[in-house]
Image 1 (spheres, one colour):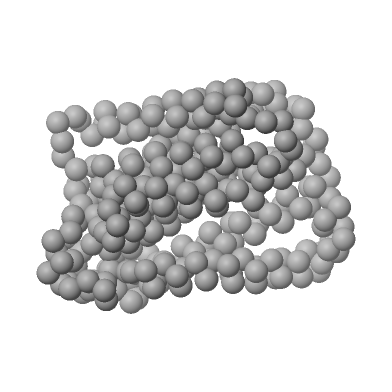
Image 2 (cartoon, one colour; image 1 turned 60 degrees about the vertical axis):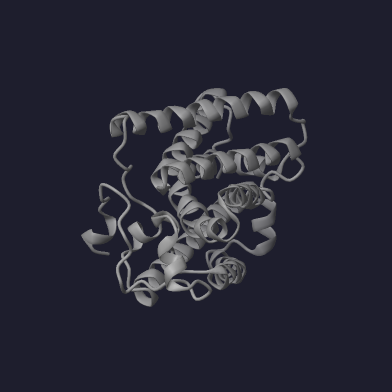
Length: 286
């Protein structure tokens, strides 16, 4: 990865000439789009990503079962131990994130000949009336306020059903790893995929509103398995996903939705740490 890939230019750059228009768009129609929607991938590429995600998840599951068995943790023990199953889940998720990020990097650099981070929507805020530092602070504060509102709504309208995700907080090791991933890893990958890769294709085909709605629903469904039975919580995450995409759409940069996302996750994680008295009430595991 070169410095060209990770630097943040001051405003949305034009894609390099080597990055072609999507196959379903004439060149003139492609150039007529706002710069943040001129991604060189299309619906077929989204389908390939979806298939890769499902197949990759399945193969990683088989691989990790074998690795855990080689270290003396048989499948039956894995299912019976919340600690080992939590570790399995987190490692599986981390490897899947790396797989998807690696695939997108290879596609954008190899197939389209374009710089990865800028092409997928990561760049600094455009010049505007408000100072950039104030906008950074505004999105971070917005993430905290959004998290507080969601937590309040979940308490007011949620149910007491036990959701699968609670099993990941049965021991301290798993809880710490999950919280670290939620703050430092998940926002980068999820914003890159949902707001950087998926949103431009949907928005240029059906409009900004459809892009916001679709990515919000997909974001909620991504977490549905972890929250199965907590229907209010799933619905709230759909709304959260829409808010993230709205921020990306109006600012024209994934950086905005990332700041919302990371501050939202930080607030939720910090609230959990406070509620558990800094994991004092969580089993130390084994």
